[in-house]
Length: 268
Image 1 (cartoon, rainbow, N blue to C red):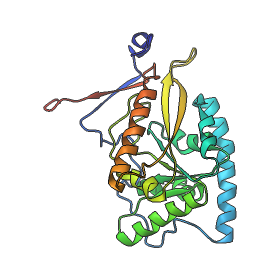
Image 2 (cartoon, rainbow, N blue to C red):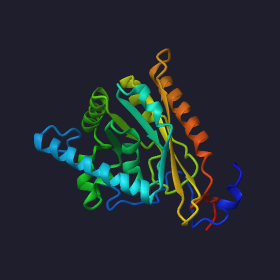
Image 3 (cartoon, rainbow, N blue to C red):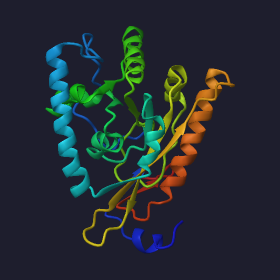
Image 4 (cartoon, rainbow, N blue to C red):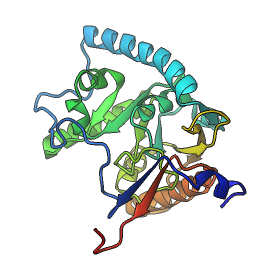
C-alpha cells in the first residue's frame, strides 16, 4: 500500500458488494444475446472495409477528446510496443471502464489497429452494437463451426500485424483498483499464433479538482511463449507472467472512486 492511500480512499463515492468475481455490474440490453448465424468476423466487401476505416478513424478522434479530456487518461511505457512494431500482438487488459475500454487500447497502440474480443451481449446495445463490428469487435461464439471462424479471424489479424485485445477478467467493474483472478484459457491464442504478448493495466489516482480520478494506463511486455514447453504449459506460463505484472502495476492506484467489498456467505 502506497503512501497517501489512506487519505485518498477513506470516502469512496460508492461501495459495491460482490459474492464472486463472475458478477456483472454492467448489464447489456440482452445479456443472453447470441452471435447471429450469418455473422462475419472479417468483413471483406469493399463498402464494409471503407466504412470500417471511416468509423475507426472517427473513433480515434472521439477517443482523443473523451479519454484524454474527460477520463484524464495518461499512457505510460508505450515505448515497449516498438519492440514488436513489425509483429502482430495480443494485448491483455483489466476491465474497469464502460466506454474507455473500447478506446484506450486504440490510443495506446496507435498506429497499429486493434481488434477486440467481446461478449456477444455487446452487440445488443442500441446503436453502439451496430457500430462495434466496424470498430473491430470479435464477439465470442457458441457453436463449434462459428468458433473455427472466430479462431481464424484472430489468426488473420495477427498475421496482418494488428493487435488483438482481450479483457480476461470478462466483466466490467468500473474503477476497480485490483486485478481480479482470470483463467489461462485465452492465452492459448498467442501460443497457437506464436506472437508477442503485452498487458495494459489501468490504474487510478486522485485529481486536484473533481471527485472522479485521473487514469494512468501502463503498457508492459513483450512476453513471449516459451517454445521449450508443451502448449498448455506455455499458456499457463504466459498467464502467470501477465497476471503478476498487472498486479504489480495495479499497486500504482492511489484512489478508490468505487470500492468493491466481498460479501460474506450468509450476509444479507
